[in-house]
Amino acid sequence: MVVPIEVARFVLTASVWVLPALMAITLHEAAHGWAAWRLGDDTAYRMGRVTFNPLRHIDPFSTILLPAILLIASGGSFMFGAAKPVPVDVEQLKNPRRDVMLVAFAGPASNLLQAMVAALALHGVLLLDGNLRNWLGLNLENAITLNLMLAVFNMIPLPPLDGGRVAVGLLPDRLALPLARLERLGIPILLTVLFVIPWLAGKAGFIVDPFAWLVHGPVHVLKYVIFFVTGWI
Image (cartoon, rainbow, N blue to C red):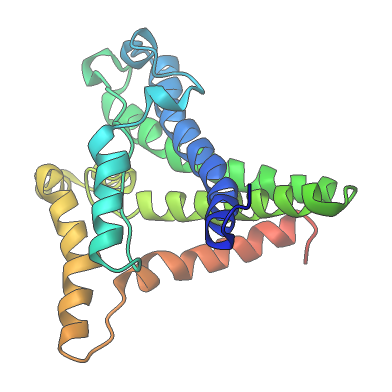
């Protein structure tokens, strides 16, 4: 049986993106649950969320359906999604204000660590050859990019993103309380800023790319730092 070249290319592309994406999302959410567990809240642990099993962290709408809808609607230029949030019982935390920040930061921190490990693992790939070397190399390169993007995006200081919860914990009450009240509006605000405004600007003949300012720029800097630290530069 002859496989059409378009299908073969799609399968190859998917094979070097799906595994890094699943690892990045799974370890990010598991890190939240693990941090909460270690800080006194075993809610996520009892619900089986401190696990490497990606099925425990996937939400049918926000992880699968929403990214697909946005990808199709934007003609392949934009995609946004999220995993199932890890439940945290603030009342069980030993020091709620501090510990909520630590639990929130654990997710992006896990992504930075994964990016570092992937960059180090690339050295080992050089010992291989042929198709296996190319396939593993692409997986690791994509893992670096995806994990850095996930870390930077989630540290945007707007609830319900991790960076928003960190900001709420760091800011004085007069600033933290109004920011915390944006929890339910956070995702609509993000979608408007990252998708609707650029789309409307494009229709008007202007190029507006907030994602490049908020994510791509910091990711480029972090990637340079990681490649420097791991001996690639």
